Each structure stands twice: as C-alpha cells, then as structure tokens.
Length: 501
Image (cartoon, rainbow, N blue to C red; front, side, top):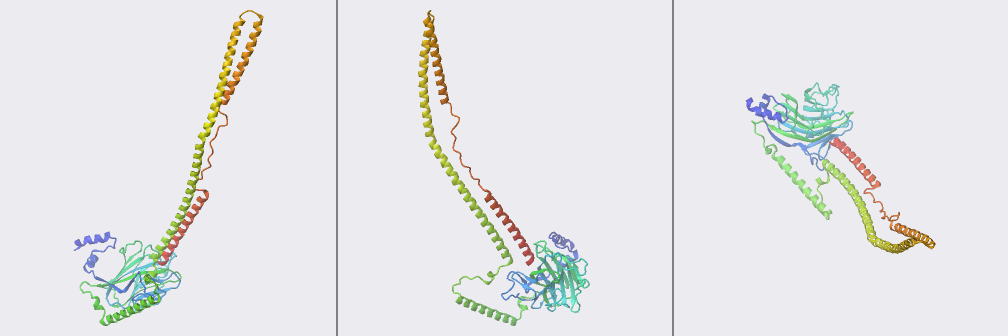
C-alpha cells in the first residue's frame, strides 16, 4: 500500500506542502470528505455590504466597520473591540473555513490580536479579543502582544472551552492551550490565509504567512485530536486593541461543509423547509415590487436623466482608487512633458527663423559682391593699361636717349674740345631719364601690389544655443519637483496600503 502512495507523497513535497507520514497520507487519501461551499456562512468582496451597511447573513458589533471589499474589525486606535458573527447556526457536523485577513500597524509591536470562533452561542462582545468569555466551543487566537514576557508572540493558539472556564490573559492562554505555533502575521506583503478544518473530531490549523501570493501555500501550524465540538454553532471572528493598536481587516471568510464519503451529501433543497422557501419568495417579490416602484418614481421626477449610473458604480474600490490616482499622476507628468516639448519646439522654430534670415542676408550680399568686384577689377585693369602705356612711352624715350648717347660716344671718339662737353651733357640726360623710369616702375609696382587693408567678409551675428541657461534651470526644477512628488506619492500609497490592508 505504501508503494502506490510514494508518487503522491513526492508530488506533495514538490508543491511545497507539509510532509505527511505514510499512515497520515493513507488515512487522508482513504477518507477524503465531500466538500461543499456554504454561502450563508461566508462573505467575500467585492460588493460585500448592502445599501443599509449590513453584511448578508452576518451581524457586526462594536467597532467593526464593513466596506465593499473587507470588514475592518478594529481600527488602529486604543481600546477598540469588534466582531462579526453568522446570524444562523450551522446545521452540519464537520466543516472547514478559509479566512483571509491583514493585521497592520506602524509599531514594531502590536496588540491585542484577532480570534476565529466556532461556539454554541454568539459571543458578540467581551474581554477575549473582543468576544465573550466562557464560550462553549473553540477559539483560534492570533495573539500579537506578549503579556507573559516569554517572547513567544506573535503566535497562534487553539483554546477550547466548555462554557465554564475564564481565559487566562496574563499567560496568553498558554495554560489552557490545546495546541499552538509561533507565527508572525503582522505587516506582511500579502494577506495572511488560515485554513481551519474540523473533521472526524480532529481540528487542524494550516497557515499561509503572507510572503507569497500563492493561495495554496499553506504550512502546518497546529492539530488537536479527539476534540468534541457542538454539533451546531455560530461562526465568528473578532479583534481587540489595547495600549498598542493595529488595524485588523478581514477580506474573506469562506465556509465549507464536509461530509464523510460513506454518507450521502444532503441536497440543497433538503436543508430549507417549504415554509421558509415560501417566506423567502414572498420577501423577494415584495422587494422587487418596491424596487420597481422606486425606479418609476425616480424616472417621473427626473425625466431628463438617461443612463444614470448604477449604485455599484457610484462607489469605487480601493484598487480602483489606487489605479485612478496612478493614472492621474501619470497624466500630470505627461502634460508637463508636453508643455516642455512645446517650449522646445518654439525655441527651435525661432532658431530656424533666425538661421534662415541670416542665410538670406548672406545670399543677398554674395549676389551683390561679384558686380562690385568686377567694377573694381575693371578700374584696376584700366589703370594698369594706362601705366603700361606710360612705361612703353618712357621706355621708348629711354631707348632714344640711349641711342643718342651711343651716337655721342661714337662722336666723342673723334678729337675736339667741343665733343667733351656734349658727352657729359648726354650722360646727365641719360641719368635723369633712368631716374624717371625707376620712379614710374616703383609707382606701377605700388599700384599693382594689394593694399594692407584687405576687404573682409561681413561678420555673422552669434548663433543662439539650442537651450538657454534659463530654460535649462526651469527644466531641471520641473524634473526635481516631479521626482519629489512621485516619491511622496509612493510613500503615501504604501502607508495607505498598510493602513487599509
């Protein structure tokens, strides 16, 4: 028998569930009960409360505050007590409940704690975690505060009572505990889940510490065998605060009826008498008629209103509110970025206009310069031509002077006093002509040489930078404000999440 069960045990180990011994696994596989959901002993969001603020099939007392998604048993204020209980007694012997809750507080130590009940009578108010003492049944206590100083809190304690015992607060119920385990259930990232099973006179407590979103990741906490509980009773959950305070929020309470495999599971029609069915049907028809009348009256009073929102759409849930706030923040950031983008576009447009104006001016100047330079060059050419003509004329004169000088020299070779004077006069004339030629050549060279003051191109005005200093500081300031706002917004959202969950 153990060999066929080996794969099942390995599968349970792979899924991270508590390891079971071979005998326990055999017993669990052989006696798996039939499980049926009981909506009259359960609640779960969304749309948890009715229009009058009540929870269907449940009653709340003390400081408990029902909302659309959860029931806040106590707020994080000192000396608060609250509880919720089923209106009707259960009519099944064995059961299983799955409770999802959050216990959050700002301090390192919280108080007092939360309790899950199954009792013969409703313990609406009292000193034991907000419920009555001397109960007949069982209470599973999630104690946050260490009253006895043994440093064994937060912890989970299973305490049974026959209706005659007083709860031992000073010792945190340790003297009356049937079973216990030490688990920290405060300020967890995910809701804490507890599965309590009472089947074949055995009470088992499994807990999910809230470190993972996996709903089936349970760990073994406590087990009490040979436990006798009332065959019929009320389910409830309560909480209390003391000198220290936590928010105790219950997100869901799901109840299942367990039926032994050898017994036939009762049908839903067998549980409700015919008289009760007729009564409920009459109440439903009456409520339906009242609703139709109110709709007609509203339409007569407001004929212009079309497509008015339903009552469920008027109120938003916590998740919807968080999403709306996130979208609004992102929309504001998007608008700021668009504004900065528009300003940058304006700056770029101004720069393009300035560059185009400068380019056109340069093009106009460039178009007018060739004509002016052509006129200057034409005047210079005419001057050069005139100078060359003057040089040619002077060269011709110099040539004639040299010819005369040669003729004089050749005449000087003949003897005679008169020839000496004429030769000296001719040399003086040649020297004078050479000085004139030299002066004309220097003047021509000076005119042909470019002057020291060169014509300069017009200087362009300085181009503006793409981003001025003022715009840069404005952009940095806006980014800083947005970052600080986002950090503050995230801090508020985390604080709110701890507050309401």
